Amino acid sequence: MTTAPISRTRERPGGEEEATTELKLGEFQNVPTLTLSEARLLINAVMDHRRQQRQVNETETLIKTQDYLDVFARFKQKENIEAVERMLASRVELELFERSQLGSLCCESAEEAKTLIPSLANKISDVDLQELLDDISKLRNFTEG
Image (cartoon, rainbow, N blue to C red; front, side, top):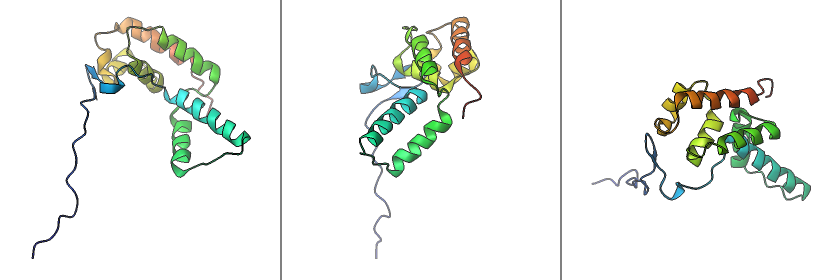
């Protein structure tokens, strides 16, 4: 007697997306992206609005997402989030994806940033990148949650 397979064969992902030394984001190439701090700000604003309208539907996924963003969002104050966005938006040589990664990761050095975001390698000098990272770091409030 033959036994049926325990699981289905796994489908290969359809896209060719990769974020290495060359960004290949497929259909997401020029799509605006958010930092974790921006996502936190947006979700909290939507949830506050829904609470006021008494249309709250907090699913387990939403609660876990909010918990994740509360832990990993580097900036909590709206003014700082907006300032970081302005700084990153001024770096037009960087892809939207790279900007949001820089704003979420808050790397301490240009070397660290280029290791974690390899596509930065030939787009921005170490000196310019370090200056940007230092400016971003000044906005972090380490006393916040």
